[in-house]
Image (cartoon, rainbow, N blue to C red; front, side):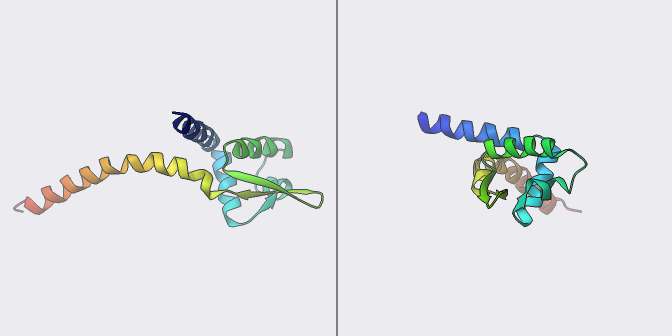
Length: 112
């Protein structure tokens, strides 16, 4: 039961982080390389403070991590943080597979 609650908490935080288009864009940028807040902010028309808030939500959702390099805080993507989301979505793949199989059968049995 505790394991399920921990997974649900991870999933909730990840979905919260992914719910905002700016945060999804930030993740795309961080998927290419590690960046400081200033480097991330350079890609957006928002304040550094706003970018920092988005980065905090991504960190709370365990989708990024932050490490200190000198005086800078460097953000990096944490692909393992997306695992609970991917696992949850994978459950629904079977519904698409069933529909695609039905479509394939219908096309193959159509006399035209």
